[in-house]
Amino acid sequence: MAIKVTVWNEDSLAETAEAVRKVHPEGLNGTLAGIFRGNEGFEVRTACLADADAGLSDEMLEDTDVLIWWGHCKHHLVPDEAVTRVQRQVLRGMGLIVLHSGHESKIMQRLLGTQCSLRWHEMNERERLFVVEPAHPIMKGVPPYFELEGEEMYGERFDIPAPDALLAIGWYETGEVFRSACCFNRGYGKLFYFQPGHETLRSYYNENVRKIILNAAAWAARDRSMDRPLHSEFAEPLEAKRG
Ligand code: ZN
Image 1 (cartoon, rainbow, N blue to C red):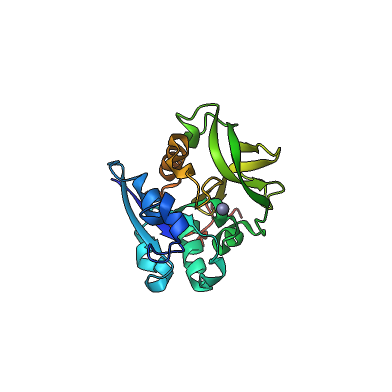
Image 2: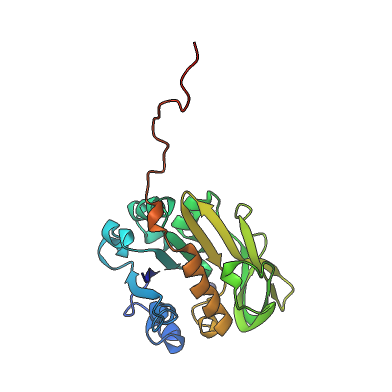
């Protein structure tokens, strides 16, 4: 069965700035959904903050195997109840991929329990990404390192708990380094944070970035057979009591 992907963005196409549209004519949602379109292993749809229930209704989330999150300026406008709905689904097994400036989204902070802040500057500099776990399914088919012509610099310290798996380290022309690809397990769900993707730059057209996002969706996808309660149920003792 195809993996159901929902790409969520804080901006609708109408709200998308002209400078972003120059790079992403269909908005970031359009470009990101395009990574999955034409791949029969995936079924993709898009949602945004302006939609009913902030684009994050229970019904939609229940029908989503992986949620892809792109946000930047409107983190504070995402209703707490919507964050709680997403959190609940992740704990029950829905995959979540948080991209770029989504690092300070409420959902990332909620799931990781830290500020998720970082150092940054915007100088449109070259970034080299080194794959440090080439055997991980997300890095399948990705070369030992690859370069992005221009990115916004995200630098350490990145205020996250130690990832369950660190897959790539980014290095920038200005000498900074960053934990660019991080995996976390929360409840039955998997969370993948991936740094590239400043909105006016072209990282989402890079073939390795696209491959990583595609692989990450397959890795994080909800396993419907795991749809059981998170808590342990009361049980009779396994062995009969002696005496
Ligand atoms: Zn950015």
